[in-house]
Length: 140
Image (cartoon, rainbow, N blue to C red):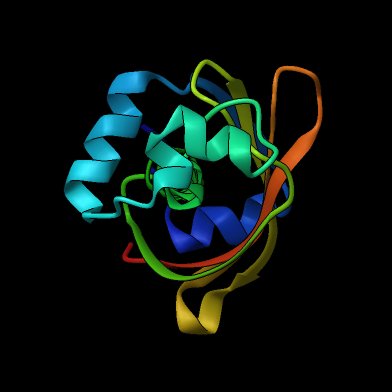
């Protein structure tokens, strides 16, 4: 886990980081349980196919949860406090997809002890499935 202070981030300027994650059936089921979202588009093969998809879609907010890992572990890491997420979901994600979550520190607002991160998620075929702008506080 990174351990950047707002001062260190100000001095570093823009930098990038990324990590990979495979979406599993267990993640999908846990998210449905935790969120209470029982939309058949996410849990029924027949329903998903009737809507033109190959299989049930991974919950968009499940994929967006990986932005939390990006901020909470990598940039800024230990001293982060998630403030705002503006996300778009561009392409469907399916169980078994291998995702690359990447971010670039775009702005350090030292006077407010916060940062702005531009982020994206790509699938194993290199297709962008989501993009986001994240604002996070830095508590050190």
